[in-house]
Length: 309
Ligand code: PBE
Image 1 (cartoon, rainbow, N blue to C red):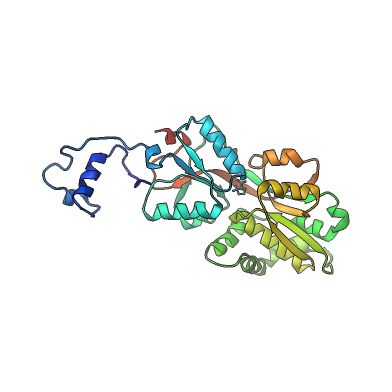
Image 2 (cartoon, rainbow, N blue to C red):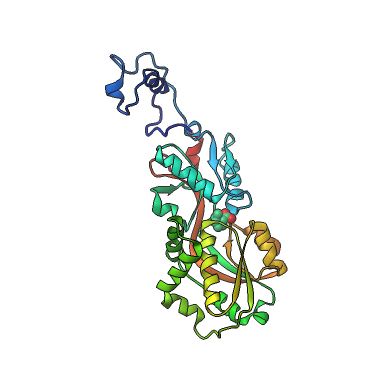
């Protein structure tokens, strides 16, 4: 990937001249061979697309944000661009590497996410509204859960927190904590919030419950946290990591009891539409989530439309 050039239209011939002259310094004025440093250079605009190698760095192929990004490529006419599937972890390491070198990069991004605490980033404006407005994250349980495991149902129904709360666990995990440890520490430090979910709910005696999730950083945080809360009232909790389609299928068929990872109304709309008759939507556990295309703040572009330049 090419170095991100703050001023578009800088002469590429100039940078090639400097490299050829063996100059490692970033200060061109000192290192230019002789006279006018631009002498003989072929002035050529380096487009945003070229700087990005016409690549949008994505995550796992089944994520809702991947389908939304394909829509954006279509809607904004970004015909030369490729959406590169990878994983949440590979996306953040590509972002880290690019920022280290101040290169151009555009990634599929979402909030809550620790990357906004770790780096200076911005969402590209989406005037066509392809990525939707604010999203909520819903808790969805299998049919019959209320009858079979009423205490768990009650806690899951009560569960509601904020993007900041989720972010606290995500930051700890990104800094190296085990998700279970970060979740336990968060619960320990937020007894007032957790007790609102568990107050008046009877303890149980080791009954099994299975929570499905996808290993996105946000869902690693929420699922470990609510799993630990269910354990604290006596459940034997199993967390099952899977792809998004199987996660929805698992709750719809009853092979998982619940999930806290449905991004609605837009991100997981197609999965939700497929299965909504077959599970119980307990509503939002978090409001104010968001998806979109994200770039480092040092990039001069502001809108998805600017990717065309
Ligand atoms: N995400 C995080 C998911 C939902 C949670 C935005 C990467 C997705 O796009 O499906």
